[in-house]
Image (cartoon, rainbow, N blue to C red):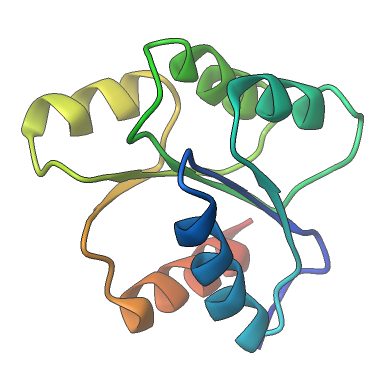
Length: 123
């Protein structure tokens, strides 16, 4: 079950993947807000609404994604990066832009849900 009432911001360029992610999180009683474009991500962050966590799938985005990741960090929104490539350079870059962790595809739903619940417990 979801521990925080704050919604989770999920960002990714693939609408179907976001839909699946939202479904998994909804089953665990989490609300989500989705963005598939960098502009949407920025608008959501500038809306003044609060979020309990941001899950950002960096696949399909250019380097501009990192400025929004840093904005999450500046707004004290815990950040998890999802990456299709398991490279230490991606982990390092993610952490340098404010991420608390990096998940690699394919995602294991149970691990994702456990990590999300853990992050809400710590915040």
